[in-house]
Amino acid sequence: MAQVHLYFSLPSILIWTFYFLFVVLLEMARQPRIMLCGNIVWAHEEVKQLFDGLADVVCMDSPDRTDFLAGLKPGGKYDGTVGVYRHNSSAERIGVFDKEIVRALAETCTVKWIAHNGAGYDQIDVLECAAKGINVSNTPGAVDDATATTALYLILSTLRHFSKAERSLFAGTWKTPISSGDTHDLTHRTLGILGLGGIGLRLAHLVHAFPMHVVYHNRHPVPDAPAWCTYVPSLEALCREADVLSVHVPLRNDTVHLVGEREIRAMKRGSVIVNTARGKVIHEEAMIRALEDGHLSSVGLDVYPNEPAVNPRLLAFPQNALLPHMGTENQDSQRHMEVRALTNLRDFLRDGKGKDLVPELRRRL
Image (cartoon, rainbow, N blue to C red; front, top):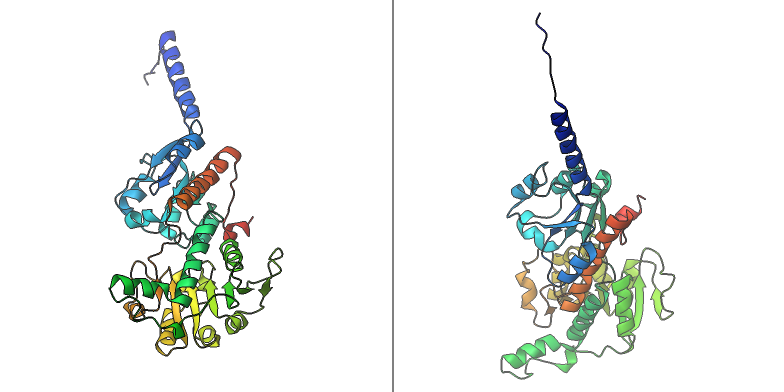
């Protein structure tokens, strides 16, 4: 059998050695990548400051989910991504971060952090993220002022019928449809806060200026709650006491229809519900029935179960104050939210851990 002899000259060996060293050094020098999944509107300079020399920034430009999932594959345009900045606006093109997307992110074996821009994170399957070893952060605190002042406006408008009065002025009818017998001052009325977190506590401080009497319900009393905030041990008891019920709990499986028929009927006749949390926390049909029979005098809503669709039956009550999810629609809060989400991602890259982990992830640490 003929023998095959391979001969390599010294120059060729050196060339191949230097080539492999170059490839290795190039790979070592390659910075990790972060993906902006949703446009940055206000914090362009902060993106540069936070990630310059730390990570390469790639913008998610996929027109649809199929293209996005393909980009996550080895050699795809998002290959090498270790962290994702996410804004709800990305759902218009690729949908929510459901099991399919979370599993695709996990299959990259590189993505370990999703920095969500927003306090509410119901558009992310956080339990699937936890199962796949992907951390999720949100932006608590950054939305407190904006959301609390939105709730305050809705309280004022539903008790005083300011929204109805403004529409009557624009219609040229002055205040003909307004009746003082249907309106009330805030002073000394009782505000029931469902969820005394950052937003709920900020609202409590705002209404204390009138003053309103503040009662609240959480799973447990808040240790550092002001002395003038009274803890109520059950949701039904909170509803019985409240002239106005303001909802401030996240949307999870266990909070869907948390405020339902029983809770609404426990409220005083002529009381008000305000919701700046998530639409599905309240049983919409039960709420509308209570408006129709006069058990509720009005509702102030910034959120709806199937946004951007709004149940037309809500529009039949001119005393209602209805906003198109305006809670954080101002440049100050939005800049703060963008920077906080991006900072969480920067901290993960720099320190191996970030802040603002959502509760479902904190419980698994």
